[in-house]
Image 1 (cartoon, rainbow, N blue to C red):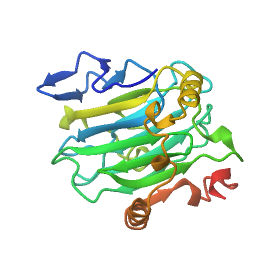
Image 2: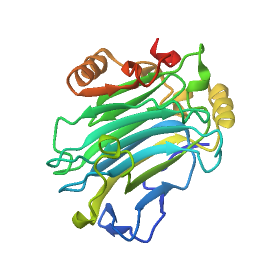
Image 3: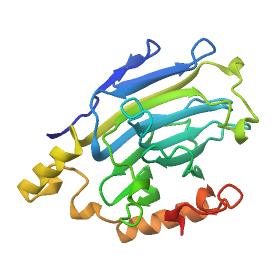
Amino acid sequence: MCRTAEEEVASLTKLVRKSSSWVSFSSSIIFAGAGLASKNKYYYGFFSAAIKLPSGLSPGVVVAFYLSNAETYPNNHDEIDIEILGHDKRNDWNLQTNVYANGSVNTGREEKFNFWFDPTQDYHNYTIIWNSHHIVFLVDSVPVREFQYSSAYPSVYPSKPMSVYATIWDGSEWATHGGKYPVNYSYAPFVVSIGDAELTGCIPNPTSCAKKAAGTGNPSSLDPVDGSEFVSLSKEQSLAMDWARRKLMFYSYCADKSRYKVQPPECK
């Protein structure tokens, strides 16, 4: 069946502290990270969380809101990532998006963006839309990236149910300038706050969702992001995404010729 699962998260660590409707958790020198995971797995859906990032210096720190099935499919997993990377100077953070499919961990599909606001001062909404047509990454309702499904190379598109995660952890080896600046624990603890989480999607597996949708003749009543309005971006959304990519994106794997002598198929 398909149903809304707002606030259906289970704590992965005793570091979680609940205050009112918000959830805060931290990473310190004693623990490498902390996080939350959904109880259910989802096949397609709308996943969003309001996140306020740690203030102060944060090199090497990674805050992530993502979908993954690595625990179920350790050798063939899918993943859709929003990762927010700590910076080496001032309080600047960078946004990184990534997609893995069917165990393609050796082909990173990262794209990186600057923010147009200070993400440490208030809560901002980070959203992933995933359906049979495309994956869309949004920040405060502004699309920053669209990753489209293609029948010409279906293996690069996530195809199995995934859990939803929200985490903070030590990414010293790679997060800030390729690992040049590790986490400085003299600034710990690094506290991230998450609230207003919305996890809406098909449960428990793609076969049952597809069969039920076909039987009703109204897919959007079962899969919340499979209606006609979710097939492609609107004109306004496309214009907003074009602005974000022109003004804010500073790295795309498709343009990294030193990394990929032969471009991944979706880049051509």
